[in-house]
Amino acid sequence: MHSLAIETQGLTRKYGAFVAVDQLNLAVPQGSVYGFLGPNGAGKTTTIRMLLGLIRAQAGEVHLSGRALQAPGRVALERVGALVEMPSLYGHLTGRENLEVTRRLLGASRAQIGRVLQIVRLKDAANKRVSQYSLGMKQRLGLALTLLNEPELLILDEPTNGLDPAGIHEVRDLIRGFPAEYGITVFLSSHLLSEVEQLADTIGIIHQGKLMFQGVLADLHDQRERYLEVGVADALTAHDLLTTAGYSVLPSSNGLLHVAAEPEHAADLNSLLVGRGQRVHHLALRQRSLEDIFLTLTGGTAQ
Amino acid sequence: MSALLRAVDAELLKMKRTLALTLIVVMPLSICLLDLAILLENTNFSSDPTYDVWGFLLRNNIAFWGILMLPLFVTLETALVATLDHNAQSWKHVYALPLPRWSIYMAKQLINLALIAGSMIVVGIATMLTGVFLQVSGLLPDERVLPVFPWGTLIQSLTLLFLASWLIIAIHTWVSLRWHSFTVASAVGIVATVVGFIVVNSDTYAGYFPWTLPLRAAGPLVMDATATPLALPLGFIGGIVFALVACWDVTRQDVL
Image: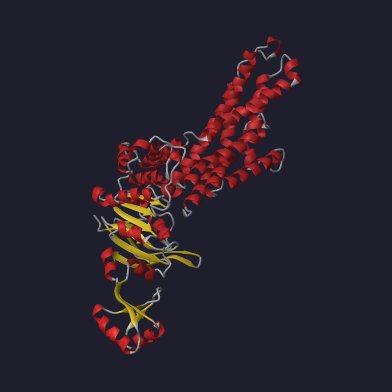
């Protein structure tokens, strides 16, 4: 088996002068849950549509499990399941009939329908018309559609969008189980850091069409710099004093000074300020959150 | 080819419980009922014992169907079939499946052809049943007995009508799949039908206007027989050519 479930090289898509996806090099390891994170409009859905051949890339290549997307017969998509935004369902048909439509298109065995209904826990509602389904049930049925061809790779675009907390919980539970229970690699896009943190072991962060970070989640945690948070009466003077002394003062929004420094410098920093007549009323060691890093990488536009 | 068969098989299931399926019966019946009402109002029918009832029913049903109801029906059916997928936003799902895009488009084209063919069969059966109804209900004056139903003439006319309608079926399939709006599809069909209604008597344009070709091809029962040799290939072969070009056009579009 090829070591990468998804590999793109220089993937690019423009709409006129606007570059939606810019030279994207994705590397999604087999067996991982890859969180594709970015604010709304960052290029996530455009990327996913290019991965599935729904829209053409103007440059670059896509390989799915080592097979070129452009290969004849669309063989690269044979073991790929995809759910792009809301599930594509026919309201006038039952859940089982919706599955049957896709089963017929795939030429899959009839047994697959029972299997996927079992996985998404929709057996009891299978004979109800989809127009009577809740959003959560529709999303689970959408996931069932993606499983009919026993995929090795699932591509899910914002799979919990629009769901209530119970629905989000159900869908997350299902996704979490896919790699271990069924050997499926999951590529999951989201604009929510918390979602990706809960589900993914590997992440890619996209902003304005460019890949800003790609790696295991632990690598991102390693980027969480520590800093000293300092509270003084005259922040402006203290800021000047610290920068003159060679400290790097980070931007902050809470009225306190954030100083890039290790804990052992806390005493020196305190002495410096007090010695210059500054009354320090707050001094604490802090560490940047993942959200801070995400916001920095994405220009502070994430939710 | 197996991909096309699989796609047609899937399309058949999608038709379940749809208005498109119901209309196959309702629209032809409405024409036959209208024609029956006109016949009963016809003074020749009640006073002339030799009046050709079958000729009247066949001529009028095929003429009404061919120039008025068929173009509207094609518009409605193709739009309803396409709307199933537009509303379900299914293009991003089916076009991401490992089967060629052309098979999805061509399955739609074949289903539309089958729906229209089905309606033609209903027109034929309903025409015959109208006569049977007149006979058994005693509405035929002077205890007249209708001669044998002219199946040959009916089948020939409906077959020609159907084959020559391939071009408008192909055009409407394309319009309804290319634009995701029911309004656009309907507007094209309504305008074309109205224009066809006017153009059908034009010596200059009627022979080339897609929406008048079915009626012109239907043979001597309703039109000058000399119109068939041009109208039939234009409608039939034109339909095949248009469907192929339309398939190429739609399947190369980005799915946004």
